[in-house]
Amino acid sequence: MTTAFEKPDLGRLIASQVPGRSLDQAFYLSPGVFAADTARIFHQDWHLAGHISELPEPGNYLLFDMLGESVIVVRGQDGALHAHANVCRHRGSRLCLEPRGSVKRFTCPYHAWSYEVDGQLFNARQLDAGEDRDALSLKPVAVELFEGLIYVSLSDQPASFAALREELTPHVRPFGMARTKIAHRRTYPVKANWKLLVENYNECYHCSGAHPEFSRSHSIHMTSDRVAPLNDDLQARAAAIGASAVTLDRSTTHAPDGSPDYSYNRYALFDGFQTGSEDGQPVAPLLGDLTGYDGGASDVYVGILNPMLVYCDHAVLYRFVPVDLHHSVQEIIWLVHEDAEEGRDYDLGRLTWLWDVTTEADKRIIEANQEGIGSRYYEPGPLVEMEQYTRRFLETYLARLA
Ligand code: FES
Ligand SMILES: [Fe+2]
Image 1 (cartoon, rainbow, N blue to C red):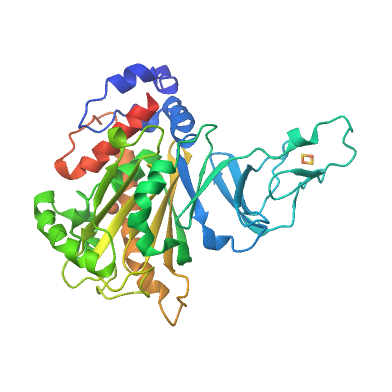
Image 2 (cartoon, helix red, strand yellow):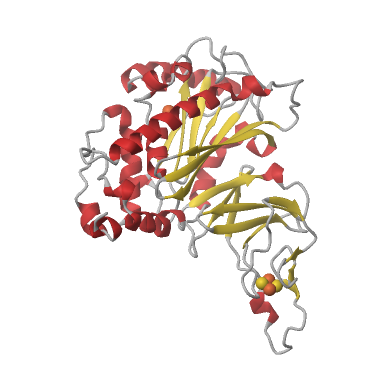
């Protein structure tokens, strides 16, 4: 590999990208670009870490792990969420080794320093009396709870959730995401750079070919002129059941200053489909305060890495997690109403069928994409109108990297 790949001139590389075309090979193959992605995207943006139902009691914790960083998210004695770097203040051992658990205090497995769940140092055997114990609290990490979803940011100056919270809440609240539980989660390892997962998720140009199961029910794989009348019809049906069908785009240049990107959009399923299921019939009890089915699905983004799709009876959360330059993980979390019981109110196979089969297909096409981009014959190609959100992602990405 050439030096240009190891240590690219980022400024020149970014400036040489042609708007409306896919990116240069270096963005998918260069360790230098991946280092910049890590510093400017992964260490800055917000990441979905989990759902509040995972931490019902004080002392319950979960870990958020990414690229060698580990964050403990824990529910405090006061019920509030705290997040700490999973790094002991003595000589740096990981404190929590299990991905989930429940503690009264955190005790380091190395020399047994212990910490309160709010991060305060509790006990350090033989520590010199002159040491400032307050300065030895666990390092805090930014955490936000939004409609039951837990987000963390590794940034020292994380983007503010204020605008997102104010503007997005009225549209997401009717789905009662804080009153859901995790019915299932599955991890799909993908041999590809993380950007190809996000690019793929953001366009449905590939859907009619790659996803026959999805395309039977979701109108979004059609061009906008064909989808528009269906979405116009959806407005009244959504209003009738208490769902919002506004289109809210706060991404790229539309994002408020100092805010993460966010967006909301509800689109129509085809006639006969009430939700994202194989036969179009409901797969779980209605979410939140909805009074019925409108035949719609809401696409919601918090940051650039955390999309979710919300039907009337379940929600599908996505986590795009980089592993290294050439490997990523896509995790899917299926949420249902907190009172729903498996076997009585939902069948796991019916609930997960659509996005499982769709994500398996995505894994195959994304890996083939990565292989082709690695060829000496690859050169950036033109995006079409149906890839407008992929284009938007690439513009946001380049702006963040610059
Ligand atoms: S590294 Fe944690 S107690 Fe020593
Ligand atoms: Fe896809």
